[in-house]
Amino acid sequence: MPKKIVTSNVINANKKKPRIAVFGGRKADETLCREAEAVGRGIAERGWTLLCGGRGGIMEAVSRGCKDAGGTVVGILPGDDDSDANPWVDIAIPTGLGLARNAVLAMACRAAVAIGGNYGTLSEIAYALQYEKPLISLHSWEIPGSVPAENAAEVLQKLEALINRKESL
Image 1 (cartoon, helix red, strand yellow):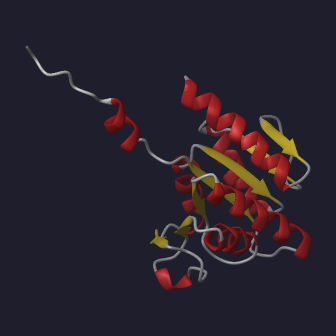
Image 2 (cartoon, one colour):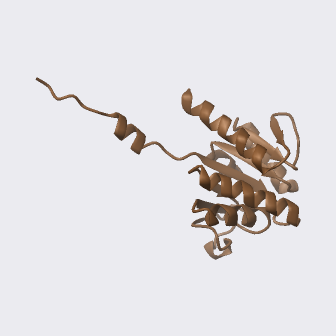
């Protein structure tokens, strides 16, 4: 009689953690940085992986929140030197692409969050929407295709709904 093969544990063990990108400016006020830190903490608490630009401002705040909560932080850097990464980045990926790295960041995620930001953030938003990635906007550019949120808790609630919906498809 053939042995019954159990595959459910194998499938669950190989399931990839959702990668969540956070876009935001290298300059940000304290209020936005606190929100970004809370988003990063929530990403880690849910077992997701954080992707960001890996440098200062919003990127540093979200990295700090994620790392402090035990999460994994991947920084997609514009230059060719991984020492440009903020101290909370676990995996620094120097691309040498300059602002074109925004396309890599947007493509690599399952969903994205824009927090504050300026034109660099706008380009990341544009790439994410072009690649048909779900995008939540927290005090950032609100353009067609983005989903607005008022605070970090709402961002995380909306991300959970998006991730759970995609996993059940």
